[in-house]
Length: 381
Image 1 (tube, rainbow, N blue to C red):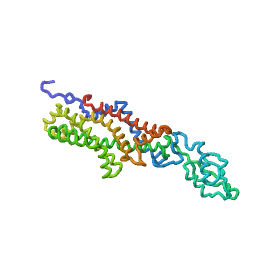
Image 2 (tube, one colour):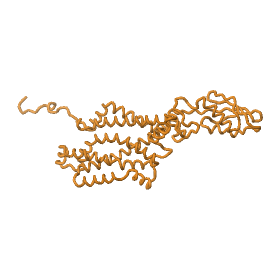
Image 3 (cartoon, rainbow, N blue to C red):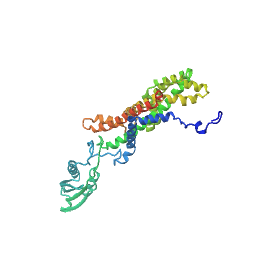
Image 4 (cartoon, rainbow, N blue to C red):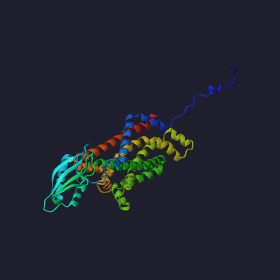
């Protein structure tokens, strides 16, 4: 080729190299972490079960079954064979009759009611069967001795209590799912509020430094000195007890720790070369904090978040115990565990299943936190 001749186009242009963003690299590392990925899937399934599960259990979370108080968890339907005859005899006594020839066939109880007096049996009193949690509407098959003897068929209501029932006769499976809804909502949303405020406040304070940092941190110290319970009581007095109050009360206090953590990270980050280069190029303070400071503090933030969610759940349980948090008929995992601890001797299932649910959530959050920490760590990029 002659000297000075133009090179072919194909030799001048190589393959186009497309860069990957830091978020794309972090997502790839997170997906390769099997423990974190499994925990994300499991936590998602738990959340979906808590949200949609109560619609499929067949039991409202506030429905009280007076005939099924503290029944054990079982895969078989209630009532059990040993429960039917005593309940029939109990209802027969209320009808002022004696129950005889009791037998169950294909979900139908066949029995004979014999009046204990000379008067005929008042058939309106058979409504006691329907009011029971075990039986449906009673049907008179045959009347004998001028109504003093009735042959009655009563359908049996089949109920499933996979987690058993609590001390008030409410389905524990539905209650656990409802509790998971509230605990996860309070834990995640209050944590999000705390992190949002804390990260912005701490990053701004640490980057500005000087007198602005001194004033902002003294405000944090003043808020630290306020009693948390007093703060919540004041909110209850002004706004009343409601679900949103929990987000405000917990999120408005827990951001203080986050602000200090982020401030400490920012003090070291703002001395890095890439931050100084951005300052030399004339990038605004707001842009430096958003694009350079905050993304590089996400590692400690994520780790703290995984610790803050269970802390918030426990705080909510403590407030509910004092009567300032979740109120009946609503519930939370902390409240269920507290009730189960009181009944551990005679009803261990009341403590077992809510505890397993809470432990599973906490393990998932810990594994997810470890995975996010490794994925977002700037030293591994």
